[in-house]
Length: 307
Ligand code: NAP
Image (tube, rainbow, N blue to C red):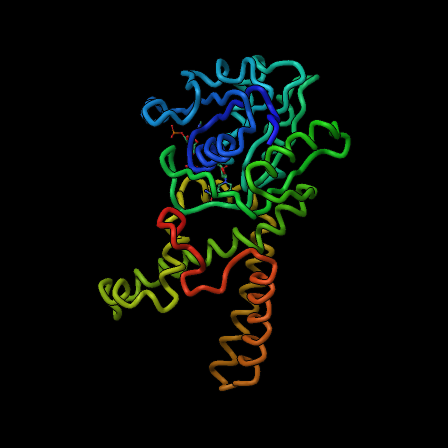
């Protein structure tokens, strides 16, 4: 595939940034990849494993000559990073991000973007519960959507170029406005994570079932909750603090449905339960048919890094 950008700077060198490095290299999409991470420990690891062509000790130095800058830090850290890099951005460059929430990131980063620099927020819908520069792999984005959230007056050629990069990394791309993105993700990702965190917390609290029983018998459904609930606490704290309204709306609906199911169980209303589970089974089938998961018992996650 042809080169899309000469120089890409990744700010933050965790799971998403390191996966981008591998995916960009796999397809020869960029001339040079440079990076910056907050801690000297992460920068050292990135140098040691040759993640980028060059790792800088400051974010401003890293973005200086970049054609594309991607902010790969937790949502709550985006503003401070944008403030720091703004004076060093090259005229004509594009700034993007990979944050899991879009409205608050746009409000936090947008004001710092200088005239002559394009700002095109994005969110790859792919991840694992692992973090850090060693956790990335080239296949993370394969066949997964990356949602671009450009402003209405965004430069079309800059948007198309960013889309080309994500397609080159294996993704399919779509465009959405920020509010709709945040609602969709509250349904498909944020609330399910909260439910998983809760279920794992409940199992831990329930004195009559021992910890060793929970671990031993977890394959019966609980295991997938624990995988999700092992996700990075900082990232997920920031997601909930920044997608407050949509998550609370979905949680409100969830609580109502849960009460209805609770009542059906108490009253022995098997029809209600059966109808409900029939409807949800069809949703699962739709996801498999859309190629977004597999029917395998391990959900297709044979690679331990993806598990
Ligand atoms: P990660 O593996 O935990 O890496 C985060 C990186 O950000 C690290 O390099 C870390 O630096 C840096 N960082 C953390 N706090 C910072 C701060 N206050 N200031 C500056 N840098 C800071 O995270 P990730 O999974 O790649 O997530 C990065 C972004 O992608 C987040 O916005 C997340 O919402 C989004 N995202 C994640 C997933 C997922 O499943 N993981 C999926 C899609 C999108 P140090 O290592 O030096 O601490």
